[in-house]
Length: 459
Image (tube, rainbow, N blue to C red; front, side, top):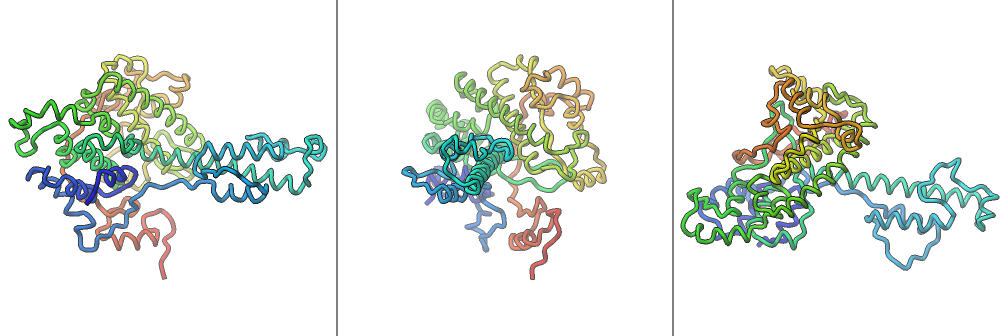
């Protein structure tokens, strides 16, 4: 039998919605009405437990950053250390402190990694009382430099993965079990909607599948105390309406879903706390976008991928920015603070598009996404945060109208309206291409089909 802890673990995974739906069905059991069971069954019948082969080619976890265990153990060996305290190889602060501590053993400053200018010569080593050969000194110095490089790479990888998660499902992965378990119906909605949000993008020249489906809607209705059987408040529900409102953990739900109806159940203090959190996240993402932008030769006019572009990192981070921006915008309106948009109105960040997708789009009668025109005109996010440029509502509206876009309906200056879509089974994908069979998908992945790389035929 599945428990709330099992559901909570899915927030850190990429479980198929079908499998999470089955977990919810087994967990709620008789608490579900006949109609709710039918709606949930549309997904649960396709779970791995209920299909013949029970297999998927899709990874069910997010990537994880590899810590500095290998490098630290080598440093302990080279420096002949006898540590009294165990080091957490995956904790950035502990890794940094370890480097600083052993750097002092050879009088190396943390961050001073210029091989020509920052090393001590023989005279300087003697002055510092370092009774060590040049060869040993250089060996330890280089090791410390590599450790610092590993720390930077590890820190960057953690940030990339964190932004990928935010781009998919907001802040649901940050919810503690103590918060998650406060209300069963809230937990079930969060777990299922989280799985829907984590779906991978499909290779298509149309829009992607929306996350909020009929099952998400039904589970949210349970949080609102709405009888799905008749879609109205019946007498019994009316009697417990006030109780249900108090029980529902709207604060937890707001970490993944910030619709108007959710936010209206939060206090102004809670909304303010969320606003501060999302503003800080936007700032972090903006500076990371700048880092990628500087290193990549991105064609801003077309946003078509070309050689040298780190498209995966850019797109994941752009998703994170747009998700954070949507939440920020929702809270601004919920607090009645939309006048602030006359002073500052962050723009969207466009994803990089594969050239073949763009060609496919043109061949089917499409044209360059009009959002690209707006993106080309307004200041870049990091320029706004650094105070180099200003971007306000009037500017965004002006360029939206020039591009033929409705500024509000296109989501540039107002919260998006969430539409309920029909549930669709999760497809097996190979680099975004839908494959009918998971076994065939696994073989195609191994042979590097649709990856843009040279195919590797298995013997």
